Image 1 (cartoon, rainbow, N blue to C red):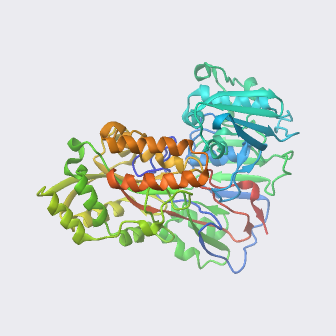
Image 2 (cartoon, rainbow, N blue to C red):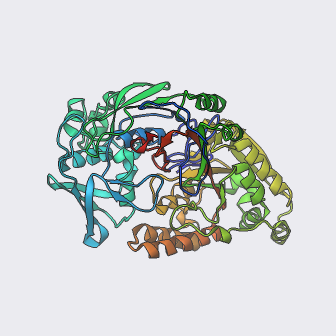
Image 3 (spheres, one colour):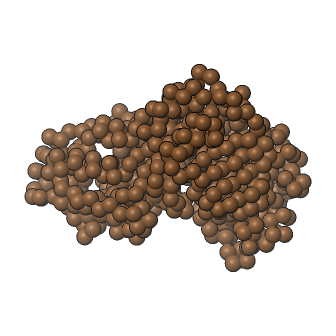
Length: 553
C-alpha cells in the first residue's frame, strides 16, 4: 500500500506507493502511468509518429532497490521481476478481480481452507534451458520466507511448502487465507531457477538470511522463465532487458526494453513528444494539456488501487484535541471534498471508506460523508472543548499521482479553520516525515496507501492493532468496540465466500468510520502518456506495466 507518510514496500523516493511497508510519498514530479482501459479517459492521436522498431524506451520513477525477487518490493522493481520471473498466478492487464492460471494451470483448496494444491504447467523451461519443476517453486518460496527481507510478509501465513511430485506444489497455511491466490501473482514471488541461483550463492535454508549471497548477481542477471532477461543495469541510470527467445508463451513482440532515469516531468514530456521516449510514467498535470494536442501521443488517466486518507494519532499527547471523537466527527464534515478532488486531478474519485473504489469490498462513493460545516460547528459546540488546536504533518517535497502534498495540506488547514479547528502545518522532508509516522509520532497526516496485492483485505491495515492502526497509536485493546472491529478483520481475512467477504468488509468500514481516526478522501487516478503507434499498453496497480503485451502497430 501507499501513504503520504505511512507505507508498504521499501521506502522509495519518486512516485512511491505506501504499501504494506511504505507510505506513499513521491519526491519530485508526479505520478505514474495509468492503464489503458480501466475506468480511464483517453485522448488518442490522430496519426502515429513513425517511431518504429522493436525497442521500447520508458521512463519510470526509477525507484529500484533490488532486482532480486527475494528482496524487491517497490513498484518499479516488481515491474522488472514480473517481466523476468513467471509467477504461479497472474491477472490480465489492468484487471484486479479475476486471477488467472500462469505457471499453475489449476489449483484446489482443501483442509478447511488451509491447503492449496497447484498443478504446474508442463515443459516450461527457464531462460537457462533448465526445466521448471515444483522443486524450483519450493526453493523460491522457502528462500523468500527464510531471507526475512521485504517480501517475506506475503508468505507469513505459509506453514510449509511441499513438492510431492515434479508437477505439484502444496502450500499448507496456518489459517485460511483466500487472498493467498492474488498474493501469488506478485513479482516478488516469481519462480527462480534454483540450480542457477544456487550456483551464484543462493540459499533457501533456515539460515538464508546470512548464508544467501545471490542478490549481487541477480542485480545484473536474471534466473527466471519470464519473457525478458536482464542484459545490463546501471543503478539510478538505466536498465536494459532483452527478449527471452524461448519463453513458453512465444517470444515477446519487443526485442529490448530500456528503462531510463528521467526525473523531471517536463523533460519526460518533451522527450515523449519528440519520440525519444515511448512511454512516460511521471507526467505532471501541467504537461497533460500540451501533450493532448500532439497527434503522435496518447494520454490517458486511470483509477488506481490506492486510498488517500487523513489520519489522526489517537495519542492526545501528540495530537491534542484532534483525537477527541467529537472533533474527529467534525473534521469529516468540515472537509470540502469537491475542492480536494480538484487538487487530486482528473479521474480521481471520492472514496467512502478505506478500500479503493476499484476493489471488491469498497463502499459505494454515494455513502461518503458530505461536507456540512454547520453540522461540524454544532458538533464542536456540543463537545464544549473551547478552542481546538492541532498539528498536521506532511511531506513538503512530495508529489504523487500529480498531487502536490503542500497544496493538499493547505486545503485541509483552510477547511478545518472554517469550522473553528486550528491546525499548524508541519512540512518535513519526506524521509523525515515517514520516519515520524513509522515511529508512531505523527500528530495527524494524510497519505495514499497502495495495494500490495489485488485483494481488499490488504487494506485492513487501517484496523486497530494493524500496521496503520499501530502507527496511529490505536491498539485493538483501546475499547470493546475496537476489539470487536479487529475480530471482524480476522474473520474477513479468512472468509472463503466472496460475497460474504465483501459484505463483511463493508460492515468493517462503516464501523471504522464511526470509531476510527480516519477521514477517507479519494481514490487517485494516474496520468500517463505513450507513443500512439503502441498497442497493448496497460497498467496494473501492483506491478505497473506488462512489457509482454506491448507491440507496435
